[in-house]
Image: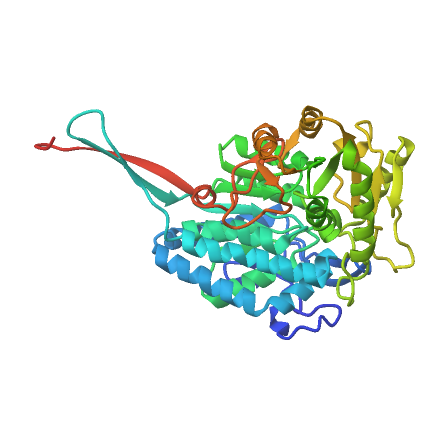
Length: 502
């Protein structure tokens, strides 16, 4: 096991928050292999911590612990589960600054973005603390005399939560909070890039009073991720899998879960369109687009990937975007004062982003801003905020999700043309439209093929709002009243026949 010390001084107010071993059944443990791996700061390209490289052979112990804990936890009252979530929520909020520093070093995002993620993440602990006491069955009028038909809701069982690196605290809490509210136990597998914040959350869950085995965290490398994830998906004790990540991996996990017909929630790729019409308030659209696109250097599933602008305002909107980007976006290490856009989390992101820009230039795009990797920033993974015009459907950026700080502007003439272009993708997570014509807005709401539509609105993700896509962006809902917690519940129907009653 590790010595519970980082490789650098993290400058934490409470050093005990730093945890670098896996967490199973209330114990901090290493991998059976004894192997560990480095956690890299994207802002420097240098390791700052290590974690156990758990593999498929480590899965059974974690799932067995979760299964044993579930047998008792499922019988706790909704009030008890609500109070546990509230205590966990309070501890996370109390330790926000320390967690934000760890998050910056894991992801490369700015300190302001890290704080904002924790605020967003704790909206789920708060929300599901309430949802725990709102789980309800129903009664139904029977067709036959003397019968009574009713339903109850029960927790589904052990949950495997497979979490991405772009919003690691928020994604753990969005999944685990719903599961805990329902009465389930969780085995979480954070991304290899960002395991430390998940371990801190486990430590705070322990402080909050969660029983051993209810929350477990398995850390692992990219090399061991496929086998470990497959073992979780195929384990007979695991009854539910929730995954946030790429469409390609989501389809693989879906196949793993198919043999045992496991309940599955998939929140997958976006390639989201952003439509700006001639009658839009351009200031409003720009104010929504800049943070939506460049937050965490463009590494969000719901970020605007394709921006379609009506011809009458195309040039004016492009100039406005460039002016705002120059004024607002300052690239640097996430912990440096004045930084408003940090590093990309993984070096592969640099390669993909640079490749899309080069492809667009070769196919006729004009670079209005940026377009290059930032050198002279040590070994960090930095790329300039980039704005392209004259984009067309033949470019890679039109069909591939970017996950980088590149904004491409496509021109359109009619509403029908814009909708056709926006829907011309296999994905359907979110779409955004800006217009002051209420009839058009309603048509766009109905005609855009996405699970979430921002109407004169940028980022709309919130605990009270159902989150999820259609098409190749997955299925199931996370957050929102009833629908999210129902992903972790079974509905059981009872039919009672009475004697001597109507």
